[in-house]
Image (cartoon, rainbow, N blue to C red; front, side, top):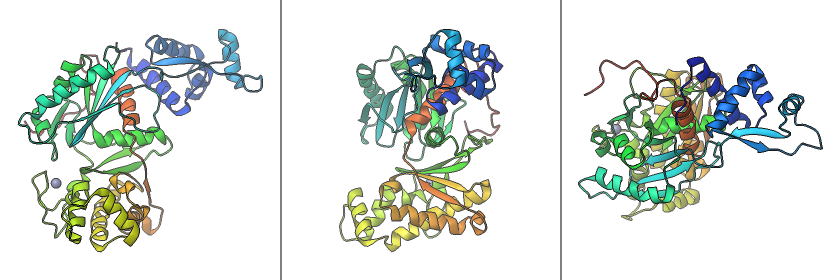
Length: 409
Ligand SMILES: [Zn+2]
C-alpha cells in the first residue's frame, strides 16, 4: 500500500518522518512544534501514518512522575493518551533491502527505525564461471523468500554499483559486474517479490546513511573503498543533483604511470590500485609470496608501518579526492569501507595527503574522517523518500528528473 496525497501533504509527511528519524521518539505536540505545523495538521498526518503502520505508538514512563515536556504533557492530557509517544515502526520489516556486490549479494528485511549498524539476514554468492548469472541470481533470490517472507513489504530497495539511471531503474554501465547492464534487475526482483522495486546507486545509499546517522553533517564527499572505489556528494543534506546519471566516479581517475587494466575499459584507473584486489596485487608484488590475504596486509602494516607502494597508492587516491573537493567546494571527506579496516595510520596518511592537495586547507579546516558503512540506514531513508512518501504517482515511483538528451541506448 503506497500513500499518495497532495504535494503539500507529501512535504509535510516527509518533514515529519525526517524529524522522527532525528528525534527517535516524540509526542504529537513535540512534532508539531518542532516542525512549525499546527497540532491538528501534525495529528492528522500521524493518524494516517499510524494506520499505514509506518509509525507506531510506544508507552514511555513519565520521568520522576512528571510529563516529558510541557507541550507533550498538554498533548497527552488533551488526547487522553498518557505517556504515549511516537516512533518509526521498528516492530516489523516494512522494506526489503538488497545489496548487490561483485561477489556477494546481501539481503535484509528493514524496519523504518534508524539502524546504527548494518545487519544482513541472508547472503549468497553466484560464483563466477556461469554463463547465465542473471538466472542463477534469480534462483538464489527465491531461496531468500522462505527465510524473509514477502507479503508485508512496501517495496524493495536494490543497491547496486556502477552508473545507475535511477529515473529509469536501469544500470547503464557497471565496470565490475558487466552482466547487470543487460539484465532487468528490477523485473527479476519483482518476479520474486511482487512489490515496487527501486534501483539505487550504492555510494549514494552510503552517503544518505551517513547523513541519517549524523544529521548535522550536511555537506560532505563520501568515498567508499571496497571491490571498487566510488563516491557520493551530499549538499545541504541532499544528494547532489547533477544533469547526467553519473557522479562520484572518483575511482576511475587515471593515475600517471599506472598500467593496470580497469573493468571500465580504461588503463590506469585509481581503483585498480586501491580496490581490495588492487591493494592485494601490489602487496603480493612487494613480497615473494604468491597469495596474500587481507589479514596479512593488515598485520604487515601494523608491524612495519606504511610501505612505499601503499604510500604512493594513497597519495594517488588523495589527489583525486582533493581535486573533487577543490571543484565541488567541499571541506569534509567521509571514508568508508576497506581502508577503515586497516590500521588507523592508513586513513591518517590519506587524510594528510588530501589536506595537502585541498586548497581550502591552506587557510581553513579540511576534515577527513573514517566511518562505518551505514547502508541499511541509507536504504531506509531512500525508501521513505521514494516509496512511502514519493513525489510522484504510484505508477511512476521514481522522482521526476530532467532526462539528459544524450543518454546512451
Ligand atoms: Zn576505470
